Length: 469
Image (cartoon, rainbow, N blue to C red; front, side, top):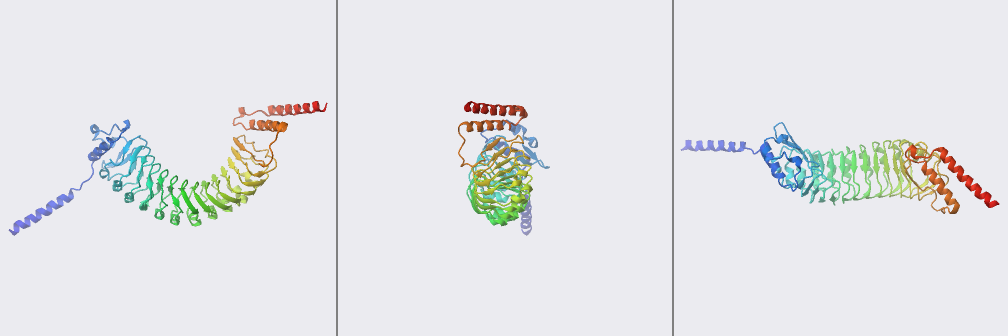
């Protein structure tokens, strides 16, 4: 009896270990079957996915948009731009534990982002951008701790950004506070949604971020100081939201790797921090349409790589970096329109070799425009209107023959010319504009211009002689 009992115990353990060894794992066959079932739920099936069929079920690794690993199981699915119309809730996530790359961008996939997406434990790249996803961002995304790239932009997501995303150590991606768990996250793109939370402080835990885009949402509140931990950021886009408060010097001084800083179309207040001069890698700086006040600090003269600067639509009062203006050798676009800037233009503004567009309208500038303005640069756009400039137009303004758009520069309080004077002004303007043609054949010759001016002068002389008789 004792021997029989012992035998039963042994058999029980053998059976138990046998069952434990039967671990359910995905196979190429079960993955192929899952993909076909998902495809069959599409309301529109693109012809490019014809290889996804039961007659071809044993050739999974040769299917369109599929890449396999060495074991023959799916490692990458790239369906970007395939014009798929369907839902992700019909996708069987449990069959794709081997997936590292999942790209469904630029399709017509709607519905919620399923919480089951958190089961893709090896996923490093997730792009669901430019679809019709709605609802909230599931906090389960925080379980994707290998994630390095997350794009949920241009959808109809709403709600908050889950705080749990702070778990993602390689990537960051509505904004759940759990986002900070993505410690490896490098690229986070949530543009063009309807996210209506504040920016969670936990986002500052995603210290490997190099690209953070939260533009065109409804984010509000101040920038959390924890974002100063993101010292590897090269591109930061927070434009077109409802963000407010001051731009902290601590944040600016931590973002020294930035190439692009875009905070436009918000409600930021206070002064532009002088620490901005530490961002010597900056190519693009857009702070327009906020409520910033005070001076444009002299430290702007340190931004030697700056190509485009737009500070328009604020309440800025004075340009302090005029003595270092020549340092901005790469500056092509300079826009400070609709501020409260006053004083005269610095003479060295004529010596910005890359300048193409300058917009100073609706300020309180006065004095004359530097005589050599336009001589050494290829200007295409100039707008000085609604200021108090006086004196003559620079004779070299059109010397580069590239000017396409030019608005008034004279004191707007002066009465417009009338009668014969108005005719003569229009004649000179038409001749001058003729000289700004973009192609040589479109511009009049100097001989023609001389003849026209001579004829006009002779005509006026004849009129005067006739009157004197």
